[in-house]
Image (cartoon, rainbow, N blue to C red; front, side, top):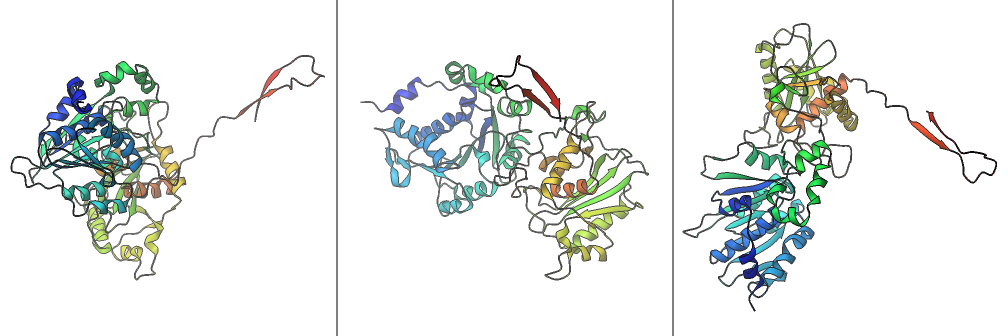
Length: 468
């Protein structure tokens, strides 16, 4: 009896985007965007076709968890490849007649990456790549190598907006689309939307309607594949609309201008050494509105969340130089606020003391995290005219890059995931707590009172509403 895989291959007709994914010759190819685009099938089929086409190929297909791997790939491939490829259960690997080997793996925690140390693969596929941490992807890709003369090693990614790896995948593919970097590796991004998936559209025509019924920001992520908004995003209010940089309506990012001399200037600071340090300079107008006008971010260029390892003295001397020389800051009295941890002197001179020696002064910041995030939420909200209480100058690219992609913690529902690149958000939080704004009182609750229908003394039934 003919193996099922051959029957399927004769019947299957990939859509235009899936065909583009199959034919990509880039060393790094990402296929993703909205939900329901047919990405999982495309990844699974791509790996099988490569294994069938190229003898003795070593392939690795990954999902975040073992459960996801089993449901999305192990079971479907066992059904499809039965009678053609041999499944080694203890190794979670399919052995093909031509000597190719497709291994199915997972990485759900930091320790899981060690199982790929010393391994060698010609092809690696990350299914739902944004669910993997950046450091996991980078480490696993060190196992990518080949000695085959007519085949170069390559990596494939399928992905939706959102997840711990969102910033990394966005930086690799969305922000630059396609380019060749200095080491010769090239990157291709193939967008996917549910409308591409004709099989799903025919089988479940209501699926699109369910996506269309989502709230606006979730609809942009899941239906339209918008990489600037996604599930789990903390600051969903944030908007970066270049069309409104000058009128400043319904956007937080605006065109720079020289702050009036009478506006008060603030400096917010979050220390980092192995991780980035962050300095933000802010102007505050007469209405209490904050403008992030300048920033200094100590991050290795081209690498997310990696500090430049400057000493505290080097950092503060640079801060002092900027404040002496920049026309928006020179001669101004600047109020500084910082993480209270910099006053810790248990291991030698406190970082705050080093700052004072360099002529840079701070007040202790209020480090209540959830309260600080709420203050930032309040400032990001637009009023009825489209004006927020916090703006960011377009030149503050690191704020624009890091703050909108922050996600909620898995263990503390109202807090930001502190494993992410949250240093700019932290120093912004300290300032928001220093100059808090009042929250609007919630509408008064209205209680609905209904007479008891089992009360025999009632002659007629009434409903009444009572404010409280």
